[in-house]
Length: 289
Length: 262
Image (cartoon, rainbow over all chains, first blue to last red; front, side, top):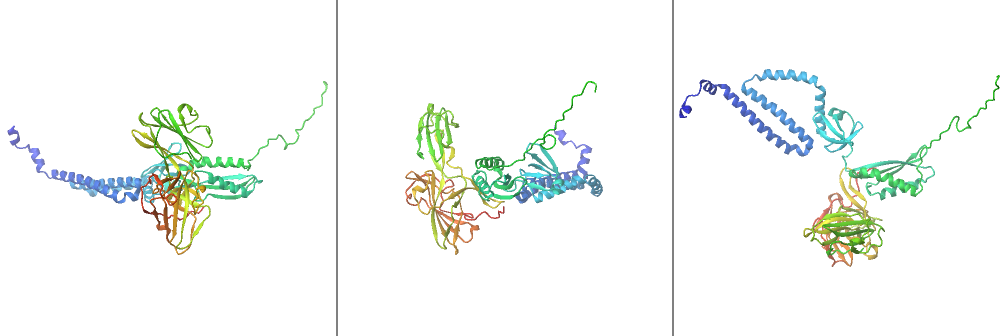
């Protein structure tokens, strides 16, 4: 046993221990290990410093950027330590980068748009937005695209570039919202009376906020009706309920007050408008003509 | 209003009924459960004030809470609305510079039902005697949801002026401005108000508010420990939700909704 320990190491091992390569490899390993620790500390520090300003999605992207850039930097340092010719590698990477850049223009555009969106923060995770006629809740915001969960539970992927180029409506940005209801009544009705009924119905509705005051306006003389608009403010959470309750309460109240809501009538007539249907009497013919 | 705020025992298969305003509710002890049912208006007009289970109409809809066999104690407690209120007098009142105005607001009470569960009283449910409409205190981007309360803002206390289920809050306004102050609305956070009972009527401790030049920086509010006379010696039956305090600041107590353009 002792002989085994006391014996001289094999020549290949002693050569390896004396070689420069070992120390280079150890140095590279130390750079990698130190780099990982530094990246981790940098991540935490940045989170504390910028996290509250960036929001959850910005934090996620920032973590990814720090990690990818940091690992690339540490990798280059480690390769340099081993003795690889970094100039050649970076040159090749540059050429490859240009080629990839041309090939992946759309992806790069999406990534850059993603950064703009994170900086601008027009919406947050969980917000309800409308893009190009598609409404839904923001599920994820990635570097390339956003995922929207529609109200019928479909998942729609929208490229970040589209979000930068088109109009995006954030429905739930503010705590209160107005529900606009257009309504027409018969020309026989008194405008003042209808306005006071609209005011009363909005005051009685539980979801409708007293302040800001409901907007009640006479919007004009329509083809077959006097037109009004009732804009009732409510909490975001109450919007769905208000959409159901307010029209129903308004209809019930109009029925009580005998206020007529006109609607187009259709009359079916055959031939020339409502004229008698012509009857042609054909004389009896004889057998021989 | 036939409400008692004291603890009472309710034996198995027994129930009692209480009324507050147009709201009626029944509390039943059944098996290992507390059961509460409430209804509005004139349904079940012949229902007595208490009885056994067999007397109850079958149409009643119940909410149920688990308890143990030995739990028999129940207590009703009055409470103020959970949201702050915006009190608006039916007609505005102008207070001269350096002057003060005392007025009374009646806030509809809610009734908390507490039942014994595992040997201690737990809140089972809260029943509002009136449905208050909501309003917004702030601008369109930021603010606070409140209940809206139209008030006659009586300057004298006359028992005839108030509903039996109103909690009477006395507010003393001091105008420390150099200009007359037109009182049109008041934001009032109800967390620091306790509820007292005096001769079958509910009161909160009184408060006084200093109206200062700059409403944006808030208005000082001082809470009295007790209601004003004639209820100064009233019995406290429900403690302040957010704890008692002597002095606080009301943010934009008199500010109207700003930045709202329809």
